[in-house]
Image 1 (spheres, one colour):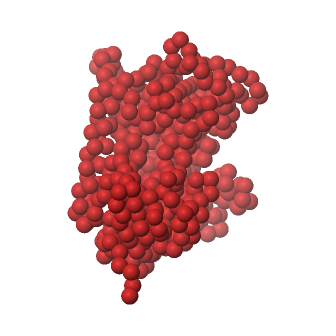
Image 2 (cartoon, rainbow, N blue to C red):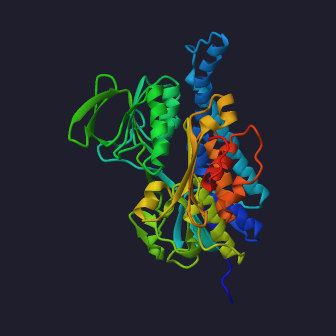
Length: 464
């Protein structure tokens, strides 16, 4: 007689990886429950993607108010009440978190509030008080901000991204360690609202994983906005001062300087939430906190799967969601890929100008010894970009010179995080640049930049 279980699938974590997986599993006929110790939506909806984008939009509106002066309008920005900006971000997070609860209920997914721990690979303890069982378990417990020794979070002076999102008033000065997407986005928000921002990055450029031209354009925009950028620089100490903190920085040449600041935001990465789950006890391989997962994201413990920030894949909400879909489709016997193609993952940074990319960039292809062609079309030659005064940016497409296969793309400029998907779809559908170049695009539109870049690759761009 086969063993009976309470569920076909239990998902641990209700972030964008967990709740999407649970809903997809239920759609495919699996009796499913999701366990969450905090709020539905996880980090992304509550203290990540969503509230940060709400802040970014408010920052853009506040900054763009200066445009009204060109119309003869007198704009007095002295009455800014940042608490109202904060409240808007929390309202967005709350609305969407409640929306996740509704979607789970609509799709007949049981929602269990509590902290989970494995008793066996099929049995989960909830708060140490009761046990639920399942044929399969998907671990989607996400990650938390990474700490640096000597710069531990107190969420008062030394803050994490979570602490930054929960601030109800603005400091006069802030130092931000780490110029990846999180550090860059907060730099944009705070500087837009008049905070004196110093952005520190150990690597030679901000947005180290992005196209060099993109990084340089964002850096130029930030400097114009008043952000002080210090690359090839690391923080070596932090101590309390009479007011705020003193942060000592060291350059690549060994030179040092001390900066006084009201707050220090540490945004140098994230740490997987793999501890305390009992993973090792059931045979799941964990290395440096990361869970090892194979095809379909199944771990070394049969029937136990892991996705998202727990495994060594890009720390992106949409990646976790797709990994979860693949895992549960495999569980349900539904046709699916074995894993995500890394060249089809979009990356997005929501500063101004926005940065979006996928596939290989020039440095990657050069390092790999791959011959490639490059087609770049500037926003300054896009009619709509000029008309709406968003002419800083470019569309860059990298391609195989022989086959015109798309190898990668970077779009830096207004609405780049939306535009990138046209090129990504072309890549996924195995279209050539000729297909994109000959497709009619609405005029005027920013997407004409994609058409013209594709035409440039074919040797017949019209507007440059």
